[in-house]
Length: 38
Image (cartoon, rainbow, N blue to C red; front, side, top):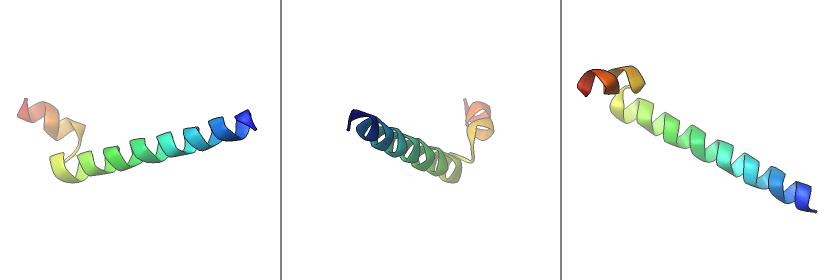
């Protein structure tokens, strides 16, 4: 039971990171553009 719970948390965490990364690329133009702006 606990392994299934950890798997679910892992999937949710991965999806969350993907969404944040996608928004960062769309809004900021990606890490390269962000570094140039700094």
